[in-house]
Image 1: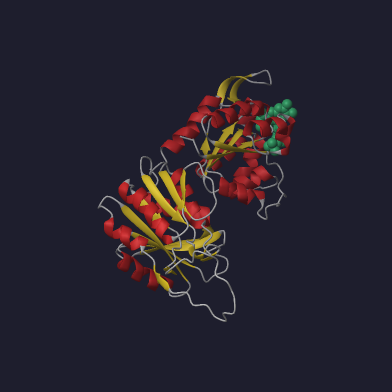
Image 2: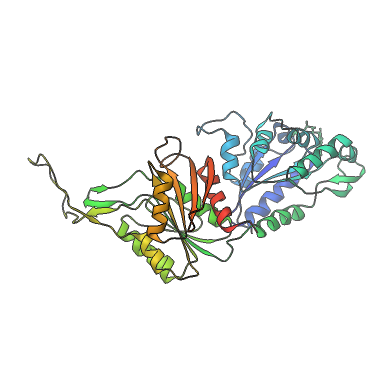
Length: 396
Ligand SMILES: Cc1cc2nc3c(=O)[nH]c(=O)nc-3n(C[C@H](O)[C@H](O)[C@H](O)COP(=O)(O)O)c2cc1C
């Protein structure tokens, strides 16, 4: 069940660090995407080269690397579905339990809002130390899953509790979490994303500023919740789930008819910005400037995909629309859900610079058929998408 999931593995400075090489292989073998972060002390026990090679990714150790304009502890938090710290040293457990962030791994743990797994491993004396036990209890209370250490022969030559839990047990614990958090398992979800392009001539089109980021985030979230996803999109993107490329509203309609109606998918989520109008005719040859001071292009109405699908869907299918407005957001959104007849409208305000179209952030309102409104506060588009899906379809 971790197939296709993003697993962030955090390694700290404990002798059991070498065992994590095998754990990385196990996740990778079963189709998970793995990234590794390690404390500077962890690298005394296992080399960056080994971890790079096994995860097929660079190992993240540097707190102050902002090459992609987003601090690593934010970018990795957005990326990961779960964060597994194994082995978790007494030192790092203490820091995380008390909100200290003096390296990348502890900063990640502090910022991480999804499921944190902690597999402690240490000498029996350290493990039984009341301060360590208090810190472990604090992490449990905060919602972390503690993967209890085993008892047995320890690297320090003594016997007792503190040995890193068996690698297969750690793996199964994460697997079980994913299995019980898949409310969309067995459901087919079609998502549209991006702005349509309506051809004027072979080299020009009428388009809009939709980046497709929100739609991609929604499709990713649906896949993470177990859905069988098809993303109908107007931009370049590769994903592990099915994607279909379209350009115009008419092409998008054809793809949606096939994927949602004919194949009887369960849910259609229309995040795409579909042009309301298209040129009546697309010129066969490039239109020349010549001596024309003005150029008139007659536009005709495009199909209303959201309305059409809402009318044609069967009672066990759901249609969700997105509504981007620059003013009177809730008023227009409520009118839209009534006019289109869809099950939900997700409304967002595109007038604000730091949310909406090309931004990485959004703030949305979910409106249901009874016109009840639920607000999701400003967050990354990935987190907003997951919150939307969890609110509509729940966690198991
Ligand atoms: C050989 C050796 C083995 C160690 N094994 C462990 C261990 O298994 N668990 C632990 O909590 N600390 C262990 N330590 C101590 C940690 O490395 C030390 O507390 C360090 O500060 C942890 O740093 P980190 O939490 O930032 O990775 C070990 C130290 C050495 C030298």
